[in-house]
Image (cartoon, rainbow, N blue to C red; front, side, top):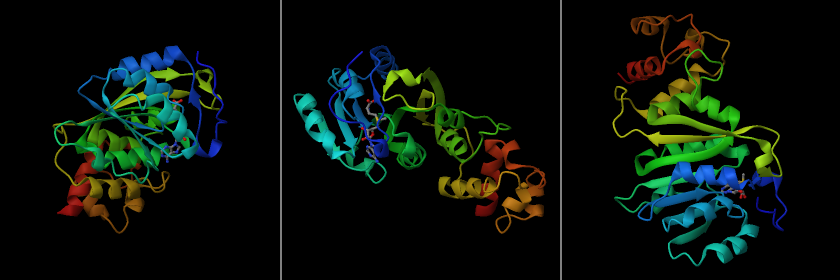
Length: 263
Ligand SMILES: C[S@@+](CC[C@H](N)C(=O)[O-])C[C@H]1O[C@@H](n2cnc3c(N)ncnc32)[C@H](O)[C@@H]1O
């Protein structure tokens, strides 16, 4: 295991640094970077994951918010000609600016847990430019991403992620793999944007609005949550029960609702 270095981890930046070499190796194996690929790491921190990936000689852009980590990252990785550090907030970062035409982006990161959900929603906006994404996340967020209809965890995040990507829960990571250890269990997830969608066409922005409304109050019926968007007759015409709860609906049902509103 690598020893924690001198930087004092900052809670407000969600800094839990990976220190378990075996876990770092498993993540790198799952990503398996190649020299002709373009990786983008969010939150490189002290470079634990960066180091395991960049030795493949891939192009590697890293986006780090904490400027106190800049000097250490540059000292460690400037020797790699295809390494570039962006001192920026990943929530506002224009990932399209990194895209160079035919080489899709491979996004990776042990994400700061306090912003992981908005960050994933933001990255989903860039899905057409992305080959795949591998993230370390709070275990529950991975469960949400991979959730199935009928589950309490089925909602906005899982529906939008599964509409745009194939989602695979790879493996779990205990708190002891980090310094300092987080209070929660973690897991690694792989998201692969769909080249050919198995779903009927729909506008993702409209789908997102529908799902947001449908889950606004979980205990309410679909009819109540969709008030002002689609009335009971409209819901019934899609073969759905207006008295049901949104968590019982399949992804395809939300697509039909979205398209009914479009029409
Ligand atoms: C959980 S740590 C992971 C650090 C390192 N990758 C590791 O595995 O040891 C999260 C990292 O994201 C950085 N970070 C936090 N908020 C960020 C943001 N909005 N944009 C970019 N980086 C951010 C933190 O400073 C920290 O380095």
